[in-house]
Image 1 (cartoon, rainbow, N blue to C red):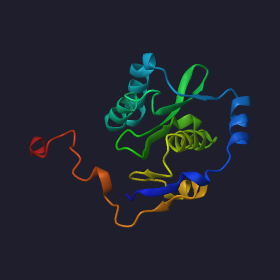
Image 2: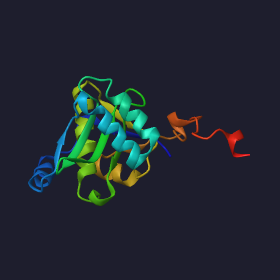
Image 3: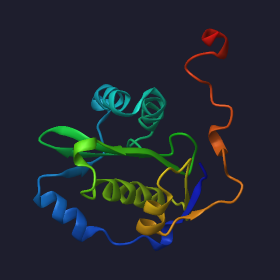
Image 4: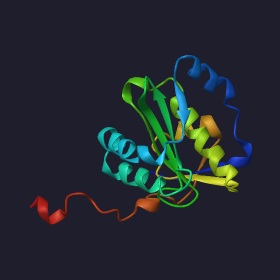
Length: 164
């Protein structure tokens, strides 16, 4: 999976979509430090320990380099930045029953806006799965030669010798 590059100085306006989702009782905010355990646990449950580890790192920033989508007092999605590496967006995910509503778009744009406010002109989306989504929403472009990128040589949870 390749990395993608985003021009932060050309982000689209997402005010209308955010208002529409808020009218349907979805809200977006950064988590508080006291919520770290709950957020990391939720991400681990829904997306695995690798992403949970990166979310944990996102809480090392003040404010947390993470945004949540919430409804009915529950986490429905998350997105982080500056977790795996500085200037990288991700990880991000939306709970299965809440996909396709635009939560992922808002979470992406909240993070990218926060990165722009930190002084970045560009952001890197690492190890992209849905490249077409990022192309469409923020005009991201693939970075040639970036596969496997930053996750090259990543430790696996089960050592190869344990499988014999």
